[in-house]
Image 1 (tube, rainbow, N blue to C red):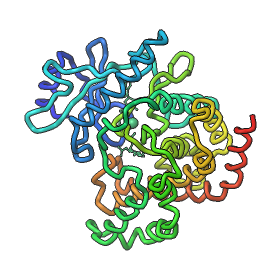
Image 2 (cartoon, rainbow, N blue to C red):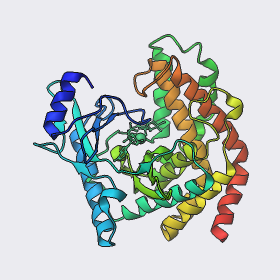
Image 3 (cartoon, rainbow, N blue to C red):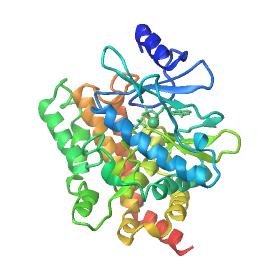
Image 4 (cartoon, helix red, strand yellow):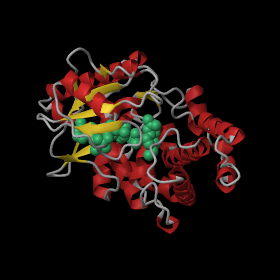
Length: 358
Ligand code: ADP
Ligand code: GN1
Ligand code: MG
């Protein structure tokens, strides 16, 4: 945030901001206030979220819905869900240069993790499962699609093909091996979208960005507090939430680890998350969804890998990068993880069956 804009944001909220980026998110710019009660202040990435006003409407609707339910059972909604803090004259602050800023109450004494233990992952399964359950009666029709075709994997594949064709920064020849890898899976990409389209899979209000660092845990006892990063809450498939949580939660290395010998998929963590998730979702989950849980981890890993490779080909215009060719490193990492998941699919199905029998 440039200093003159920063001062205006401070004025709009009556706060003082620490002028350093906070957290590990790839999309928005996140800051914390110096003043108490502390707030999280985010500059919304409007290259990605083209309609921030509708997005905030979604978030306010969802957090009020969750907040009401929490308060009804005696829980502190300021701690167990995000709470939007309005600016002096509106839900957000729009700066003179067209940037949008929003604020949330900072959930104190919390922590988030990029890598977790199986027990923490079981709790994350409960938290994401419960999140979906609490939103089952949210009127999906009032939600705007904040990023069209977000988890439409065939459309992500089409984006990759377009990026290869354009070759905007001349990297296509160098990325040939990775490109060929993703081409081999073309018929698999419709696994969820085709079944949503013909009704074999149900639509639900889903989070759509269930990266494991999008849950805040209690710093004291390690229990899940709030599911955060609600920018992509939209109608979708529960398989997106399940698969993406495992893509990150059961990873054996960081998403950008370049020593690929370290990159695999942890079956014990898969089992732990599945146990928690199925306990929370109970009867709401259908047979068809259960049958595809292992494939969803593969699909979401392939999809994210394609998105990283597409961004590398487009010249790093979407995900925040911290070093040259960072997106290519991330894509290679996801390729290795996808290869490992694919080999494990029969065992992962067995794990799901075991969880169902208990
Ligand atoms: P991004 O969309 O860029 O991933 P997030 O909304 O996930 O942004 O926020 C980035 C980081 O900021 C989170 O990973 C978490 O560490 C921290 N964070 C976000 N909201 C809160 C909050 N209300 N209280 C405490 N920390 C938060
Ligand atoms: C982004 O915002 P963040 O860092 O939680 C991205 C996800 C990707 C993820 C990959 C809105 O998530 O879809 O899976 O990076 N969010 C958006 O790390 O594109
Ligand atoms: Mg995030």
